[in-house]
Length: 220
Image 1 (cartoon, rainbow, N blue to C red):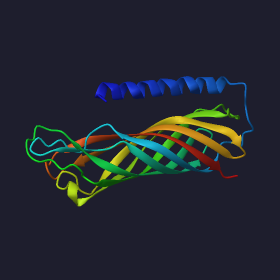
Image 2 (tube, helix red, strand yellow):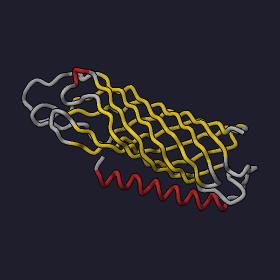
Image 3 (spheres, helix red, strand yellow):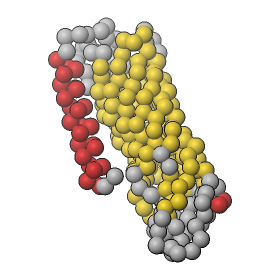
Image 4 (cartoon, one colour):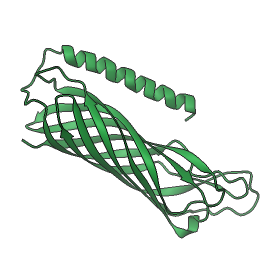
């Protein structure tokens, strides 16, 4: 995906969230409200889709993380009707893929596995009417934390273990009323970081998109 395409994805997402927020506020279907405050725990399954390669080395070969299944866990504390603080972790046991470069020498067929871990803290804003809530709640989130990559030795020096600061932005929809205190969630998230390869000494911007679906429980 090009940088322009990446921007368009977020433009569409933000527009959809804004429209859904307006529709949500005007919705006549309202379920019992408890003031919005409380703690929630959510588990998710998603698709990790890195937009950027980890390294492009014209003197050897490049490498990127394959698209793979990811697992997420969220703890969410709502301090008001609209604002909350979330702690989010994502894990994926992905594969490293060799990228073709202009290198004419031997290139390995298999770079092995890579462990992908992120942990972030974010502020969350949800769109809801004052004093009541619709079954559908769009939300936006932004924060920061760390990203860890654990690579097999066969991938060195192009890809080695690395722990780096990371930012995160996310948006999605929460749907309540499935069962008592149970919700479902759809979300798109971008984990943003930099990776510096020992092979080139260059840092590359990383955009790791995660499209996910999950279930959550609101503690009474």
